[in-house]
Image (cartoon, rainbow, N blue to C red; front, side, top):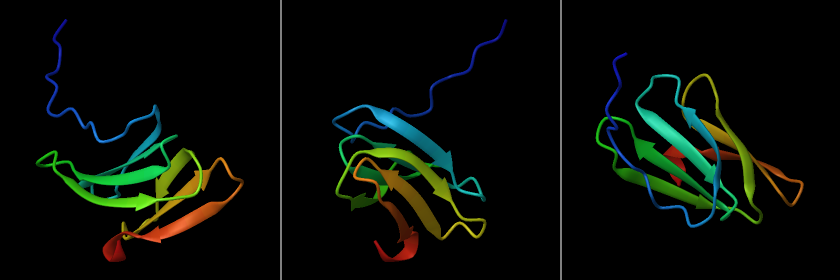
Length: 87
């Protein structure tokens, strides 16, 4: 059985990560954590690109089909839509 290699360890969150989602083009990864932060990463380089801080822990993140917005649902019963280009 062949095994893959770990390309990057993305370690900006300080609490457990509950959700990850690749952008539609595959160039970015959104991660959401109970630390209230949504992070955007480059899949090509592993570099951290953007951060959005909400008012509650994040349970789920999802990109729109155009890859320019990310929705996140928070533990304070809110859903936010974040324009990836403006954060």
